Length: 164
Image 1 (cartoon, rainbow, N blue to C red):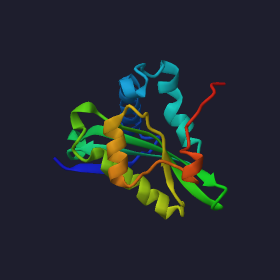
Image 2 (tube, rainbow, N blue to C red; image 1 turned 90 degrees about the vertical axis):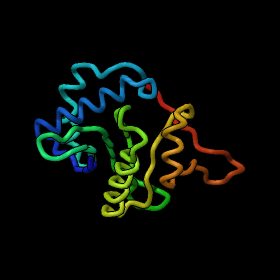
Image 3 (cartoon, one colour; image 1 turned 60 degrees about the vertical axis):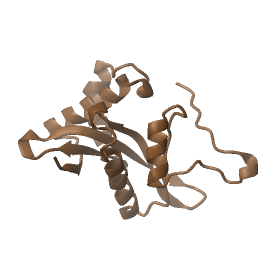
Image 4 (tube, rainbow, N blue to C red; image 1 turned 135 degrees about the vertical axis):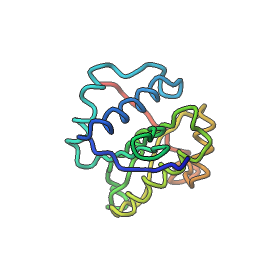
């Protein structure tokens, strides 16, 4: 069955439901933390994204029309590169339902994010990935991603966080 990658309309009920279902499935996955989204997050997420003009999402749909099944998601947030004085696009979430992994869905979602980034004049795509997520790492390298380093002698960048 064909895969279609379509932008999400955060106000469309079926697209909202698909986005939340896919992100919740990702959150439940060990690579997403193993805990589902809270009901509060499920209730607010699409409205919150709709209020952020630099947030963009795409859903991968398998099949056609009313029978189409949501099988993958990418959430992107535009940022800014101060070193290039240009926008950048961060792939904040990318998720493919387990039964559809290895079928090119992730690559198609990455291509949609890249096309949007190019249309918006972005200088680069960024993402974060767990070092133990070997399947995702392989997919990202195949797509052209590489570890971030300004100078190899200084080492690679490391993603860090502090919860507030």
